[in-house]
Length: 199
Image (cartoon, rainbow, N blue to C red):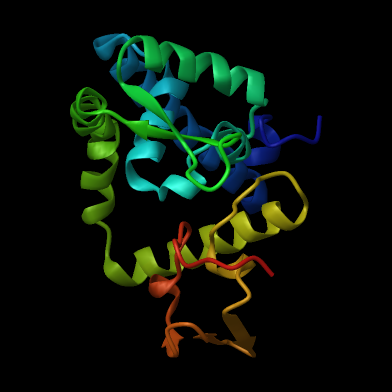
């Protein structure tokens, strides 16, 4: 069968090898996150929610924002948030402009949990640090291109990356940020930019 999971196909096809390699790396994230979740008695999605809430603007910290970010339904996110509230890791804040809107904020106890839980990627970071800088830049450029194309096809929802931002100007191989008024190299590109303005 013509599938990247068939070793006979994979061994003769670079595209299939790349897909298989990405699948292995995604497995690493699942394993590391599950290991951490068992230690702190939170589900993987609850850990990711806490990390997201800690590092993003309050305006982007709603149930609907989280649902879009993690490609899940609002009721699924709501259930995860309720457990985090019961554990006093997250609290709700009403919007001063519109009382119908509620934002989610990590509590002090929640922040301590974030400081412990986001270390699940440390072993991966250590490995990446050892890779030659030129190879890293090529790898990053390739990953960004894949993410952007997945985004265009509606498979992956990435809201704040440079390639989907109206400030980015592309001409031939040149990249320029109209907000920062600087030329960008691939290593300057962001996957999660707070100043992002959708195209």
